[in-house]
Length: 302
Ligand SMILES: Nc1nc2c(ncn2[C@@H]2O[C@H](COP(=O)(O)OP(=O)(O)OP(=O)(O)O)[C@@H](O)[C@H]2O)c(=O)[nH]1
Image 1 (cartoon, protein in one colour):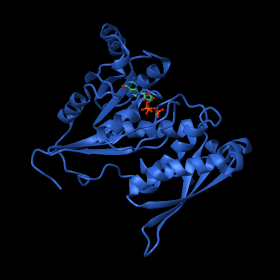
Image 2 (cartoon, protein in one colour):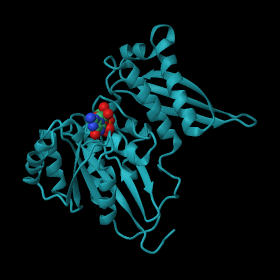
Image 3 (spheres, helix red, strand yellow):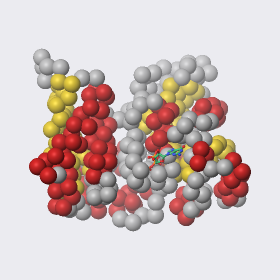
Image 4 (tube, helix red, strand yellow):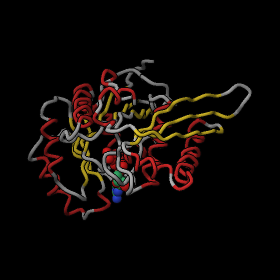
């Protein structure tokens, strides 16, 4: 669909782990589509949120944090992120006002210098700092890169988020409405369901299980004459000890993960859900690219 004066484009959100990228996306899109966690580096997949108004459509790409590569997952995602940056209309470089400048930011700025896309410096978590401290912080970043705009926000409380949206719109080219108005994400339900399960598993096991959890959806079936959707999923961990933690005493932890995930999946699908969860150990899955592909990380999609 193409309308006179209608603007549209792609916006990539980048930033160090935990700066608030998912919180921002969730606030703008108004639906729980990105995994949220107090632990860093949980947003591994590209998540697209689509924000549509009468006069514009913004397609957000929640690019995974750019880190120095540590193992192959790092390398792989770095490449994905770098490619994504070249193809978008605007990059939002989000920083955490509370934490200030860090080496991770310096690293990202080096990557930004390799692309021509306009970059907004989005200073998040301003609810946590004194206004007097903001300007010196912004100057520190400005000394390193010429940002198209600088916008302080609080993604959590919503301060200035609308202003940021308006500024994004003003940079977008005229273009078609790529997605229907009611579409908030182009990911198949499968992906969102996997993220919801992963979120519950990470949340409930907190300190005991690191980020080496992947969730694969084995099946989603709506059986005829039934209002129930049957979902089968496997939680993949790296070690036997993690499998034990996920399952818990007499299966209690797995049951809890399943119950909590089911509530969210029911809200997502708008129907009753029967969720069956399995746990599987696959050693060192993060270092095996072929398996990453099996888990849905596909380089050619980007
Ligand atoms: N006080 C405050 N906290 C915030 C704000 N935005 C996000 N947070 C908190 O910061 C933490 C991390 O937020 P996320 O949105 O998960 O961060 P992220 O950048 O998506 O993190 P990764 O998934 O690791 O890349 C959460 O506990 C949020 O509630 C904000 O504006 N103010």
